[in-house]
Length: 293
Image 1: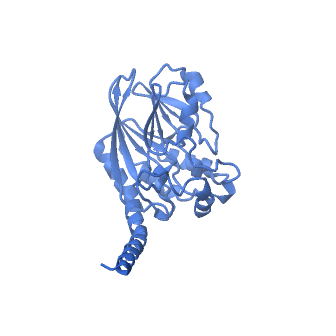
Image 2: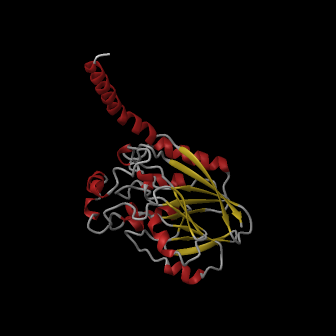
Image 3: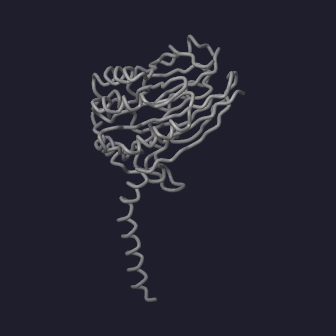
């Protein structure tokens, strides 16, 4: 084969690959994966099944398509879980879509209830937090903002968002004082690491979208500091750049399970993908088996 043929063939393959990336990334963004995780919790009275759904970003199809939300809910209902944890970013910018989303989330079947915390996107506008919290509550979803409650011998706690606040974990742990097995819901995983002196048997977080674009063993692309202004403009958060960190996560807690002493953290890749772009980190719904230690 002549050198020119080899070069032209290589260019054709490269061009074909580049043209295929948008199709591939959209297909992955619309393909839901199910993750099963088994965790041990000291002092738990009995095994508990927990479902986590996060970063739905319902904005009428720009970030997530409705059939995948329905698919995630159907999967949760089939699993007959004890608890459901919703860990923030229900919307992307406007709070209005929560009126369509919340009633559907409120129909999720759970033996002990549905519990939620809000994310940074749920606080973009002045009244967003109040509106979203009210509509979720009307759908029989318990919103936990810097407070906790007890279910089946387990303390279920929730913080406000780390970036947008009010983030006051001391209000939770000053009253808990490590007396109960604790499941902490916190949208941003970065808050887990400074709380190493507190008892956090399990923290469930989202926020990262798994990185949204991951290419093999290389670092996360598209959400690192040089790309953040572009992403911010895409999702309508340019005005937030002055008040939030320039990187999405400072602790490399992008997705999966992490541990600090006896404290355990799980970061879900969530449902939503900005511009429905996803490479190497498909959307997920997660099921946990919490077992007595």
